[in-house]
Length: 87
Image (cartoon, rainbow, N blue to C red; front, top):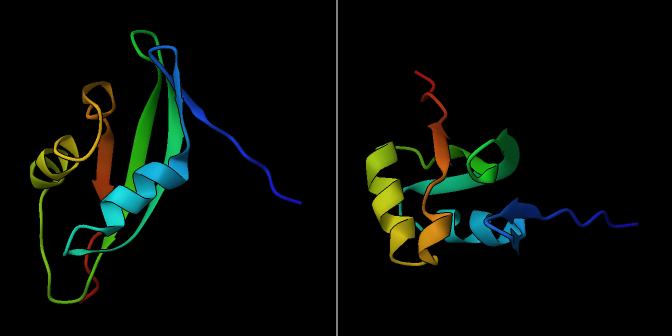
């Protein structure tokens, strides 16, 4: 059985898997998981947890700019958390 949940954002629905696919297409991203958090202004706020590839680095701002070129404008406002690298 599959559970399909969408994130409601400005009266649009988006699947977390769609957002995850954009994030993992970034050269430095190994894996990503997207969940939703309540937002009074937006309805729901997509929130991404990102794991980087070994020996790669990026910032939240760089990822925001990357997804801005690939998603419609109202989806660009996404909280992104990058997992700390293991030493």
